[in-house]
Image (tube, rainbow, N blue to C red):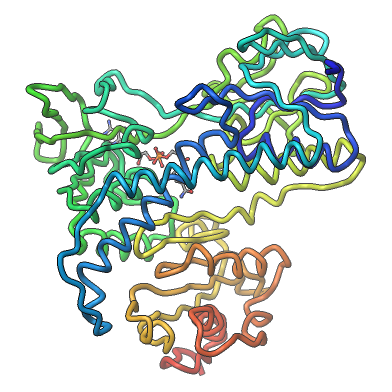
Length: 475
Ligand code: NAD
C-alpha cells in the first residue's frame, strides 16, 4: 500500500469522512485516518455523530417517543393497547444496530470511492507527514492535509465523571435501566434531548441551568413556548441554577447549586453533565509546527478553512462556528472542491439549527432579538399549527412557524419553527434563504394541501398581512 497521497484527512466524522469521499470523487489519492473503535476494537467510522451523538440520540428519541405515544396518545386515535411494557435492552440493542449499520456503511463508501483508511490516531508532523499510531505505526505523506478531529464533552472538576453514576452524554445514551431520578447539568441541546428521552421512559428529570435565560440562541418567542411545553411534559427545568458540586454517596448523587435564593441541593440516582463540548486539538499536531489556535483551543482558519500552515486545512468542530455535523460536512465539501480548483464556499448564514425534542425547535438565520440588536427593520409573519388542517388530523397542534423579512427589501432574514416534524420542515426555510428568496417568493409558491408545510406558506403570506386561514393583522 502506498504511503504517498494527494490528501490525508485526520478524523473520520461527518466533516472528515465527507471531505475524504469528495476528494476521492474529484480524482485525488486520498487517505483518512481515524482512531474510533467499537466494543470489539474494530474501527467505527463516523466520529461522535454516528457513534455517540446525533444518530444514537435520534434512535432513542424516536423509540422513547413511540413508547410515550403508545401510553398516552394512541387512545385518542381509537387504538386501545393494554399492558404496554418497556424493554430497554431491546431499545438499546436497536440503537446499537442502527449505529453499527451506519458506521459500516461509511467503510463501504470508502471502499467504493477508493479512500484508503488507516485505523489509528493521526498526528501531523513536519513536511506534511502524518504519523498513524495504531496497532502498527505508519508514516504517511501528502500534498494537502485536512484536520477534522472533532470535539469531546467538557468535563468539569465540580462534577467528576464516575463509571455510571455521574456521566457525560455518551454514558447517558447507554443506561441499562431507567433511573428513577435523573439530574442534568445544562439546559443546552444535549441536556434537553437526553432529558426528553429519559423522561419519556419514566425518569423524574431535573435540568439545572446556570443562565437565567432559556435557549438564548433561539428566537425568544419560540424558546419561551418550547420551555412552557417541556415543563408541561414534566421536565423540571430550573433556570439561574449554577451547579457548584456533585458527589456520589451510597450510589446516589448529591448535587449542590446556587440560585437567586442561595445554596440549594438535589439528590438524584444519576447525573448527566451536558455543559458543552471542546475541540480535540491537543495532540493533533506537533507543537513545533506552530499551528495557530485561538484562546479557546479552536484552530484558527480563514473563510475557506485554511490554517496558518501552508496546505493544511481544518474543518468541523475544531474551527469557529456552531458544532454541528452538517456545518462540518459542508466545510469538508468546500475544502475538497477548492483543492480541485473550484470556487465553492460555505454560506454560514444558512446553517440550520434543530433541537430534536417534542415539539421540535428549528431555525435558520436571524432571530427577532438579533434583528432588534442589529437595528434592522423587519416584518414578521407567523402561523400556528393549531390552524393547520394536517396538524389537526395528526392530533399534534403545538407550535408555530414564523418568517422574518427585511422591511425594505422583503428578503428573508430568518425562519423559526416549533412543532412536529420541524427538523424536516426547516429545510424549506434553508432553501428559501439560500436562494435569497423574499417572503413574497414563498407566498407565491404552491404548497400541497393538506400538509404541515402550508404553515410556512401561511407565515409568508402573513408577512404581507394576508394569511388566509387566520385573521390577518394588516390590510
Ligand atoms: P451547550 O453549550 O448547548 O449547553 C450547555 C449549557 O450548560 C449552557 O446553557 C450552560 O449555561 C450550562 N452550564 C454550564 N455550566 C453549568 C453549571 N455549572 N451549572 C448549570 N449549568 C451550566 O452544550 P451541550 O448541550 O453540551 O451541546 C454541545 C454541543 O453539541 C453544542 O454545540 C450543540 O450544538 C451540539 N449538539 C447539537 C445537537 C443538535 O444539533 N441537535 C445535539 C447535541 C449536541
